Length: 193
Image (cartoon, rainbow, N blue to C red; front, side):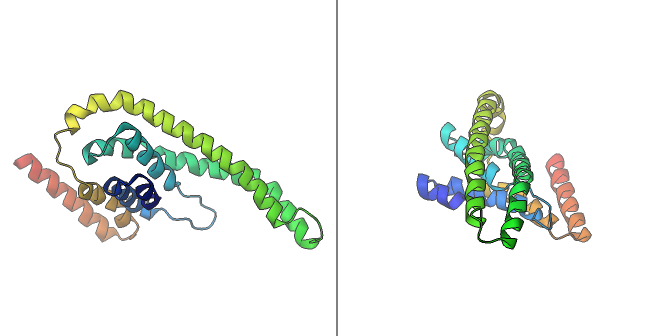
C-alpha cells in the first residue's frame, strides 16, 4: 500500500517510512485459523492520507499520527468480522449450489454481492476514520508540536520502535529479556548523562 501511495504522490520517503513502520509493528500478528488480525492496511493508509492532507513530513510529528491511527487496525478487523457474520447466509447458499450447480446463485454471484456490500462499507468507514483522525490532529498537533518539533527523530528511529513487533514474533523469552535489558540500559544512560 505504501509503495502505491508513493507512486501516486511521489513522496517515497514518507510513504515507505510509514509502510515499513507498520509492517514491522504488525509482524507479530498473523492470521491463523479463525483469528482475524488487526487490519494492517487501515492504519497505514489512514496515516498516509492524514499526513499528506496536513503536509507533515517530519518523522517527529508523524509519530503522533502513526500511534493515533493504530486503533483503526482493530476497527477494520471488527468490520471484517461483522461482514463475515453477515455473509454466513452466502456460505449456506454456496453449499446448496455445490449440490445443485445448475442454479444461478453460484460463486460468482455470491462474490459479487459480497464485494458490493464490503466496498461501500469500507469506503464509508475509511472516510470517517480519516475525518476523525484529522479532527484529532487539529487539536493534538498544535499542543505537542513544541515538544516534538526539536526532537531529531528519523524514520530509522521509528523503524526500531516498530521492530518490537518483529521481536515479539520470535516467541523466544531470551529475546524479550535482551529487549528489556536494552531498553533499561538506554533509559539509564539517558538519565545519567
